[in-house]
Length: 510
Image (cartoon, rainbow, N blue to C red; front, side):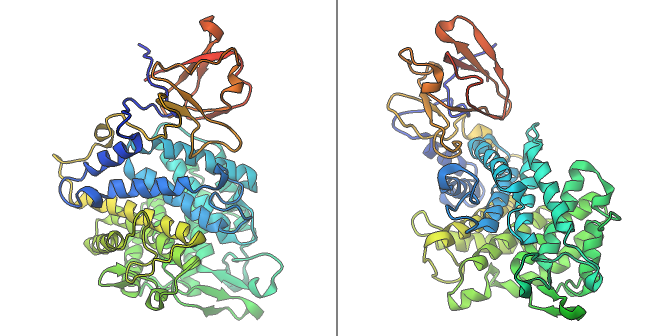
C-alpha cells in the first residue's frame, strides 16, 4: 500500500525534529555503530561520512565542467578524478542508505563531467583521464550493487581505454606514453602510473563486459600484456617489490629514471586484485603482497604513512594526492587478504590523522604539524583522508566486529537521511545544496508529503529539478488532484518541462 511520507531531497527522511538537525542525527547515529573499539568520535563510519559530506559541499557550482572542485579549467582536473574515485570507494565500503544523497549527487556529477568533458578525454596526459575512468568504474560497481546501472559511465571508461591504447607503441617493447601533446621533452616518457592505471581500467572493465581482449591479445594487447611489459621493462620488479617511475624512450635508449612513488603502489595493487578477479590466478595477489610490503618499508614511520616531503614539511599539490591513493590501495588489498601488517599501518595512520585534526580540518601530514590549510591543497588532502577512513572501516569490519556486533547502518540511522532545512516549518527539499544540477533551484515540502501552496503558479515556477533515489518511485498529481501523471522511475534526475507543468502534489512509495 502506497504511503504518503515526508518528501525529502529525493531521499526520504522519515523523522526530523526542530531541535536536532537531521545531518547531526545521522552522524551521531553512525558513531553509535562502533561498539568494540574506536568509539564515538573515533568511529570510522562517522569520520568517513563527515569527510565525504565536506567534499561534496565544496563542489564548485555543483557541476562537473571544471573537475568538480575547481572553477579554473583543469586546475585540479586529475585530482578531481581521484576525488570521484575516493567517493566511489566510500560508497562501496559503507554498505548502507546513509550515503544515498551523496551517492546520487556524485553519480549525477560523474555523468555530467563525462558529458561536458569529452568522456574524460580532456588533457593530453593518459594518466589524467584514467583516474576519472577508474573512478567511474568503481562508482558503477556500487551502482550495480544497488540493482541499478548506467550506460554513461561504462561508455566514458571505454573511450578512455581506447584513447590510451592509441598511445601504446612498440618502442622499448611496448607501453603507453604518459603525454602525447606538443611539449617535446615530455613525449618520450612511458610512465608506470599511466600503464598501471590503464591496466586497472581494462581489468575492471572486463568484469562488466567479459571481453577477453581487455585482458590479452587485442590489437594493442590487454591488461595482462601491460603488466608483463611493466615487468620485462624493469619498471616493476615482482621479486623485490621495487618500482621505477619512468622509462625514457628518447633515442630508443629505454632508460629507467625516477624512484618509487606511493600512488603507483596504490594503483598497482588494486590493478593486481582486478587481474586476480578476472583470471582466478592467485599469483597476482602474491605479487601485490610483495609490492605492498616493499612500499610499507619505504613509506611508513612507526607504521604511519608519510611522503619524503613530510620530513621537510613541504608537501603540497600532487604529493598530497599521492598518499591518498596509497591509502586506497592498502584498504583494497587488506579487504582481500586480511593481512595484519597492512591493518596495522591503516590503523596507526588513521589514529594519527584523528590526533592531528584541527576543528573540522584533517591534517596535511600524519607525522608532523603541517596544517597549512590553503586553497586546493586542503581539498586534495581530504580526498586521501576519505580513502584512509574508508580503509579503516574495512579493518574495523574484520578485526573488531563479531557476528553479534555486526553494524547495521540502516537500522542505526532509523531512516534518517541528511538534508538542510531551508525554510522554517518545511521538512524536506528537492535539489537542495549538494548535488543540485547547475542553474536549477530547490523546492521544499511540508510534512503532508505535498508541496507548499502554489497560488496558481505552475510547477515550473516552484521547482526545476527532481531526484529520485534507488528503489523508490514518485507520483506527480495534476492540478487540484484531477488526475495523476505516470510514476517517475528511480535513480534519475528529472529536469525540465516533461513533468513540471500543472503539478501541485507528490506522493512517494516507501
